[in-house]
Amino acid sequence: MWSTSRRNAPSVVEFGVNSGQYTSKAKGKSSSYTFLTYWSDQLHSAVLSNLEPATAYYYRIAGEGPERSFETPPTDAAADVSIAVAGDIGLSNAARTTLERIAQQPHALTLVPGDLSYANGFQYLWDRWQRLIEPDASTHPWMVVPGNHESEALSGISPKGFEWPGFLKRSALLNSGAFLSYKKRWVMPSAASGSPSKLYYSFEVAGVHFVVLSCYSPFGPNSKQQKWLQKDLSSVDRSKTPWLIASLHEPWYHSNTDHQTDGQAMRKALEKTLYAARVDMLITGHVHAYERTTRIYNGQEDACGIIHITVGSGGKDLYPSFTSPKPAWSAFRQAAFGFAMLKVDGASAGEADWEWYRNTDSPSVAADSVRLVSLASASAPAECKPA
Image (tube, rainbow, N blue to C red; front, side):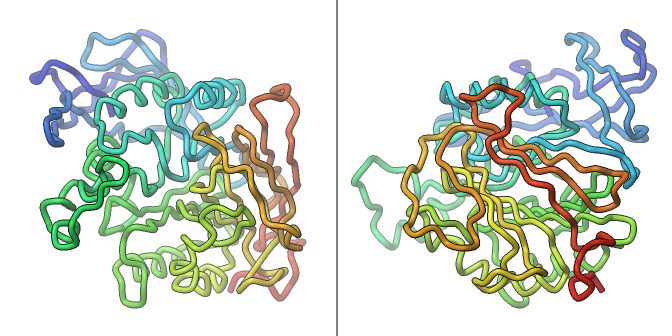
């Protein structure tokens, strides 16, 4: 996706496997949107089809832009793949450092578990933020998760201390902007994964199946999201795709003193479903700190449970306070700016290294590092094997 100030600019991407030789062309579409007094640039999107996995491609926009390149992620489960993770980024100097540090790590894609620009209704901040992320986002796929700061419903935008009257807060007018900018500026594979909503979807990279969920869409029994989730989880062949990872914004388990109860309604609605599917990890943001748990289910350590990892350390103001004593299930926790890397070892058929890096440390030194084993791997407990 890209933007132009020229309204009639063509929505075309030329690309090929050799620099300067663009043998294929993808024609897309464009649109713009308004938000109060803001009118966006023309926003273009195009789908590049029939790409080979693990292959470098060179491309340019509209036959005139500078040449850029990217490498498609591998699809073979036996291939190694590395994925960068950072949530709650914003526009701070810390955010800039996080992005610079990610650029120093070889990675196939970047996963952002919510709270992207913190525009909070000021649309020019979306423009600034997307220029900030352009070096990585123009050369690697960015898979994004809707966070509470992407909502931007007008009912949530008001001067400090001001409260909209109840009847106005519930009005269609004040809520008509909910996730408008997010939906206009990001194109995720919702339709390709059978999702009825742009706010939740799934995708696969090598031996990993990712399920992205929305904390801000109905998720209870008989909801479209829960029905879609059950269907999507049942479609995964764990003998071919060992890793099953979910991502959403609000953590279900963490020991920071902020946002203690925010994710609990969703946990009560969906934890049993994810546990039954033997989901390996749940990656979240929202809490501006880092924390990794042991495997948990229903509040207790469980060998067949889910590893919950909060990576809200991307750049927004930190939450330094944690509960005391530290829960038994909290394996590592710290309030510091940084990002994580998931490094899947394809040859092991179900093992991966998880690493979290602080921005203040040497780029080669991980503050938290652990070898993870998928519940679908040969070495996982027999009672935990996916059905």
